[in-house]
Structures are given as structure tokens and as C-alpha cells.
Image 1 (cartoon, rainbow, N blue to C red):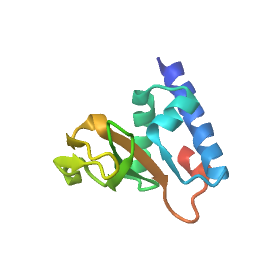
Image 2: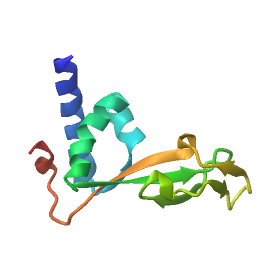
Image 3: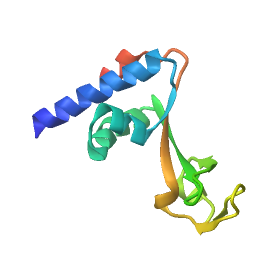
Length: 118
């Protein structure tokens, strides 16, 4: 179990370093989970301390369940409107975690990927 967690952490560190070195300061949680080949739980364990330390900021992006259009970003779940209408396909749907994508953004102009190991 500990070896898997360490392996996941190493994979996430490498992938985050790669994203930052490519100039990608924003990315979806599902992207890094998929590319680092780790579980969502391991990714949460890795990113929560970075979020608390304000090295990374998290946002929620609402996506239309019918056409997939991005319909806005919000800092917290309660900020997402209870009823949403897609501007592109006019689909109406309720607020739900099923229509949200987590966006992570590396903060700070002087952020160095190596700081994530601290």
C-alpha cells in the first residue's frame, strides 16, 4: 500500500513538473490522473496539501451534459447555480457533481516544480 502511494506521488510529481515546464499552469484533474496513471484518491491525497498551501488553486467548471460546452467556473460548489441552461444547445439541467470538472491552476509567478516536494 505504501509503495503504491509513493509510486503514485512520484508519478504525479513528474507529471506536474512536466506540465509546468511546458508552460501549462492550468489543467483538469482528470487529465493528470489519466496521464500519471494514478487513482483519483491518490491524486486527491497529493493535491490537497498543495491546495491548502495555496501553491495550487482549484475551481469547478460546469459542462453541459448534452453538448459538453464549458459554461463557467466557480470557486465553490454552493456558488454553482442550482439550475443551469446551456447557452449553445439550450439544455436545462440542475446543479450536480456529474456536470463538474475540477480545474487545478499552479499559482505564483516564481513557482518552481521542485517546491511541490517540500
